[in-house]
Image 1 (tube, rainbow, N blue to C red):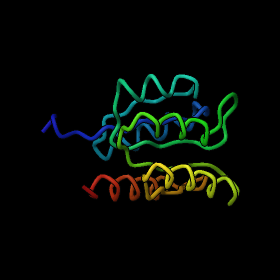
Image 2 (image 1 turned 135 degrees about the vertical axis):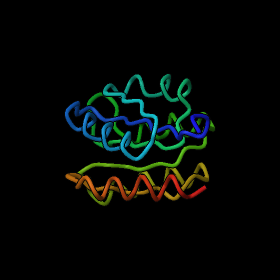
Image 3 (image 1 turned 45 degrees about the vertical axis):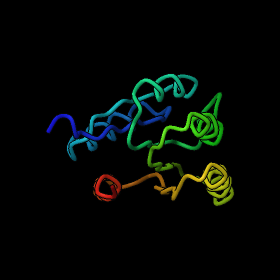
Image 4 (image 1 turned 120 degrees about the vertical axis):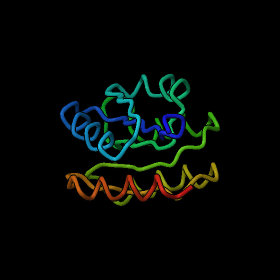
Length: 129
């Protein structure tokens, strides 16, 4: 059983939010790694190799699109959920990056999100294999 535990990596600069996401994800049976500094995302991604990536789009230093572009170049095949109170243009930009790398579909989870919405989305993505 332990071998099949799916891994979720959360990249978001809001520490309080990532604590909540961490607890919800563990409740649905995921192994979780939280990164609050987007500049650490690439190294963590390569060592953790998550099945699912939950990525905030609006962060200081590096935004979600920058992080997404870096991660896509690694060739690691994770399912991607983008979160933010983002604008449509941001979402489109991220979609473009992903489709360029033949990754997708990207899921969008608008902030603030409800606990049950996140749980349902994580369960859905986990079941997709």
